[in-house]
Length: 245
Image (cartoon, rainbow, N blue to C red; front, side, top):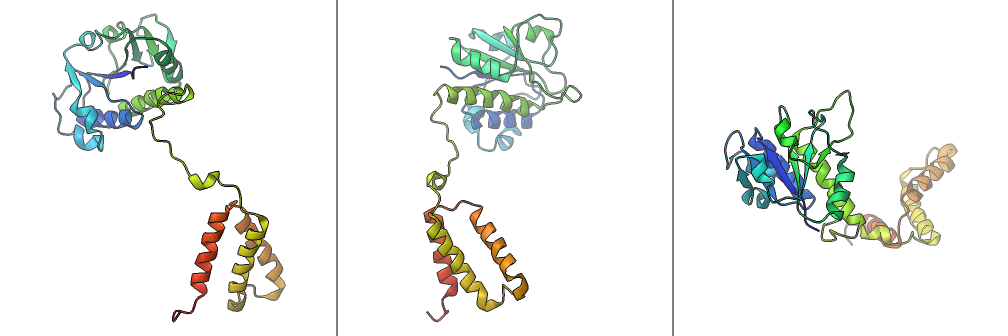
């Protein structure tokens, strides 16, 4: 499996090129090709907007025409909300991602200029039209948003297929632990109640039972595991010590 190439066709602003690079690297894409950028290349505004995705910008390749940029690619996708008079198969980001993971050869995704998108001659080079199913009353995506949608779907489909395991997935190791036994949770609640009682927390007495029930409800909702309960007990013990200790 080869990662797709992101091709920016006649982009206008360096900031948008940088933001597109940032979107790419978030999902493991590093190969960017730029066709005839309006303000030339390199662009001093691209680096700050990339927020550290320098590897993408440093290796970006510049071409005079879209045809040259995709000459070595077997599969080309033109991102557009309009077919522009060209009849081609239409896929969404998820459908395109599945093709990229199943069809051999190099895949390139074309993104047009911010103001007007891809020209008809650019779309004519593509094998598929890639359209994002968004609100028909407001079909306005900026360049980086369009890139991140396609990059995310490529990454997601790859994970489903068992590929791209080197991408970092946010995990919370403690969540894998089972909830604490009820006896430990009861001990935590009792500990808190014993610290609150002498400070008048359960006054007036007529509301004490309802206050205790609410406190128990608050403390049982998170589903603490035994390490979390132990940590909270340690905090309470520390708070209950005399400072001179």
